[in-house]
Amino acid sequence: MPASVVTKLTYLVKRDAKPYVHTEALTGDSEPHYFAEQEEREVTIHNGRPLAGSLSLDKQGFELHRRDTVVDDLYDDALVESVYYDEVKALIKELTGASRVVIFDHTRRSDAERRDIRGPASRVHNDYTDRSGPERIRDVLGQDQAAALVSVAQINLWRPMSGPVKRSPLAVLDASTLDPNDLLATDLVYPDRIGEIYHLAYNPQQRWYYFPDMRRDEVLLIKGYDSRHDGRARFTPHTAFKDPNTPPGAPPRESIEVRTLAFFD
Image (cartoon, rainbow, N blue to C red; front, top):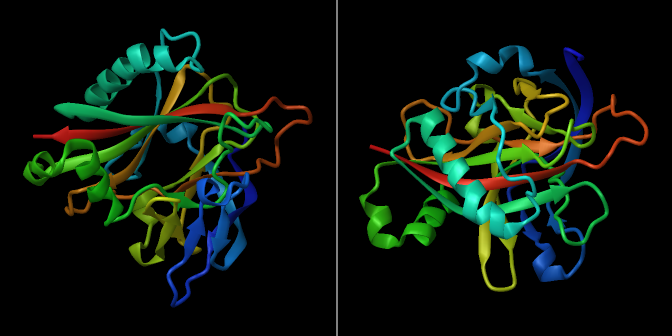
């Protein structure tokens, strides 16, 4: 496996006006419409496998683990929700020490031209912001429960649905190299509401990692938000990217991502 790859990632450019996106749900198109200046930057993405044993959600913002699932068909929503969800909850409790884990949704992504599965996200982003993270917690738990919480983290568990992944792998930013000033709050405009995510501005100090040839029995944990302001990682920007080493005719990358809230006493 290569020690690193050089490729281009898509960032947003810092401007005075807040960027916003008209989502597919609003436009009816297959792609969102961006109202922001974008730019491609050449970056080096390092092979994270040699470091897998030392990675931490609280420092780098992501961890790789080898954990299989008993669910044969991850396309079956009934099985995912009745069996896989319990596996995910138990795994996150085991790996993080969380006292409680709540799952609020899951999504599948594919870089094949399928209308029933979303495509990989192609711009550097973080799913939640300092505003939308607490909003999501209130939406899931209700105002009273959310107000009583002190320590909660939003953690995504990402797994290939087949493997090894040869196309559109996932790149994750080492959160310890993130300058918070490079996080660009962006409105996501839906037909009935406006959400908010972070996009990222380029900074040469950013250090990127990926895990080549991820298999179905491997999972990547990514922290999207942390309520604690004590120096630990709070946001972990990530994106799919074009791997220059992808062989011709490589099968599509298909993955499932479960979004959770982890609570700590």
